[in-house]
Length: 608
Image (cartoon, rainbow, N blue to C red):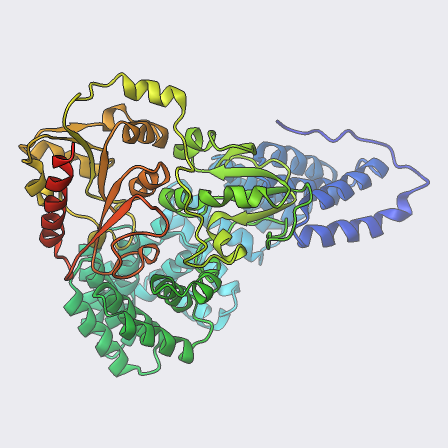
């Protein structure tokens, strides 16, 4: 909804206050205190309704709050009053581009550049808007100009002097990578390689884009080509090792990482990458030593800090692990919230936002801390992914429930759900493991009850594959055919709780398995289905947490090197009393796991 600022005559008693008010407003704006800044800008407009800078900056705040229509309206009012300011047109272009009005955005950026030809941001944003319109060739001069105006101007001017060179396109692609514009960067690297097939850096960068988008085999080809063209570059060997690891080719990956370290013994990233492979192989102590060495070389290396923390948690060192796990906020995209992080102090009636941050399973696992937060004496606003909304609505004492991505209500402080173990100083002995701590919505139970459930025999739910976007999904997941030794057991009815592309494997199995995916819209439906089962057998996915939180018996099938939360060696979980763990004795040895499950299932079935 557009907000119109009514024009008011200048109040002759107050205009002298405007410069100081503007100074205060701008300081608050720069500090991220948007509501305070907005109030001050409006105060100025109450004194002088034609104050163009306040109108413009109110529009910028609207832009920051993603209220793009209001941003357009406010900035246009500012332009009517003062039409010669380049920043006004550049920010108007940003709001129009956010609304999908790319051509209008182009016009604004071009107007800004007529007023200020050396305006770096306008050059860069003009290039982006042209890319939105599919005008790649027209965008290139603007990217080149932005590069020339950037911090490495001497090198950029030298590159820009030869617009037909492979190096130009490679550097333009890198400029886009720096902004995380992967899809827009790829055509520049491809054009670079069209001009010069032996450009090792372009191969390496295109490999990065392909790896990030899940095209691993193509990424491996380009990383391999980069390494062959520049065998002295440690980074190229290590990048090739990373994609080989993602493909499960661990011995080859180790060779690549070791060669990288031979070439560059001080390469901290190389030690981290080798440690990741060792951890997958179950070589935990060796991996830990490598992470420590990487951090000796580069104490600020965030990924090594994060990886080390997860090994500490895996080993049960919660005191160090929870503390160091906070390094994830430097590795992950952290949301911008101006309210303070809660550290466990009494809330004394304040409102706290608890928010999900990673996967569905993570959210389900740490909802157990809600009663402890409520005991601190405040009201709780809970933000969860849409698939968990109906389920979370059953939690007692939640003042307000919000879907991830929706506007947030007012609150005084916040805490990510996965930081709550640190706040409460959780040890192995103090894990809040009272289950069930989730309950199923009545309407979901009614829907599930209407399905045809067998009256006799054991009802067993199955999940064999996790989210393919998870980097180590290859190691935690299996194919449905690998569960076939279970599927011919007498007196057992199997139900598929599998979601996503892996559910298509049901069409290739001769066994009788009831597919529940067609009657599943969210995790509340999954919870209701689990409530009608006797047992859930699953790989490490959100369903394991769901079953555990509902106090349903669940058998979890784990790779040799499991996720940190399942600890080492033990066959039970301190997080879920009804959970039993079946671990690979060797890397990739699912047959041994399935055989152990078969024996246990025969025993369990005999008890029915």
